[in-house]
Amino acid sequence: MSMSNKMYNVSRKLLSATSLPQASRFFSATSKLQSAASSLFAEEQNRQRDMVGRIEKIEIRYLGTPKDTTLVMNQGLSTPLDCAKHIGEKYCRFSALALLDNNTPWDMRRPLEEPCTLQLLNFTSADPHLVNKAFWRTCSFLLGAVLHKSFKDEAGLFLHSFPKPNVKTGSFVHDIALSKNGWKPTIQELRALSIEMVKLAQQDLPIERLDVNSELAQQMFSDNPYKREQIPSISSQNNGLITVYRVGDHVDISKGPMVSSTGLLGKCTVAAIHEIPKSSTDQLSLYRVQGVALPIGLNLNHFAYGILEDRAKKLNPAKLPNEPYEEVASEQVA
Figure 1: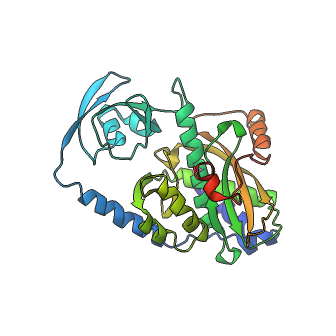
Figure 2: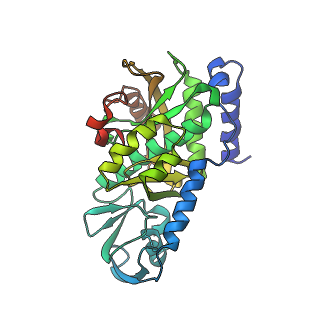
Figure 3: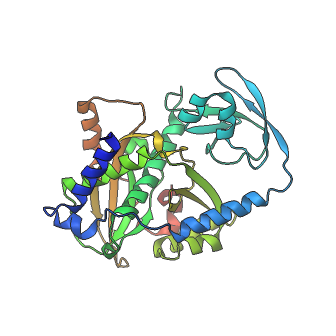
């Protein structure tokens, strides 16, 4: 039996074990059907591609190994990932983020709009600051995908938001709302969520970015009151646009950038879930879900990784989701 099949079977056992009443009550081991948000994402993505019209050529000056070179690419269609395909297979596999004109981080799958210089960043780059932030942000996004998939409908789960990445805090975060008060997850439940993160990584799914107008964003998140509340403030700060990301059938709001694929996620632990004290306006219970992860290919011994796991259990000090949104919009949505 392959390692991925073993992980899948372990996950199903953890999610359905009769010794875990909370897991059997709130967790679901079944996949959800394609979401309406994902369908809308695909339709808008195709519409924007069709609007490109006449294809114009642009010069992209690649700077890096094995040698500097100039590539002629399609404006509004070609991406840094397409550029990497001209350079070498390993650059497609291990490049996590692009850097344009030496100062603008850019998603690997985001179309290039103007002539520019291009650098491809990975996790062993001399200055890993930008790629580490993108990785941490991606982990929060993927954690939301796992939470959305893992909970049964009767749990009343709503994804709220995730704060901008801060590697120094020791944990990536996704804040959620649940109908359950006082939920204290067991070690087995946290482990089950961790396994789901690993399974998502093993699928090596592309992570796609799209800018949409606020009206379409409202449609995408019509079933989530927290997202609908956030959209006007985000739109006002971004020329009327909302940036959304998709992995599989999961869609969420984020400023980006993110890394190119779930396959860049290595070892991962969902370390803790903290209940957030309610404010006078909260109808559902809010929880802060926290984790720690390593990029693929970066290995630590069990003792060293255990230190990271212990640190990730401490309540992350980022802005809480029930603080006034307008005042901390830049802090609440990464």
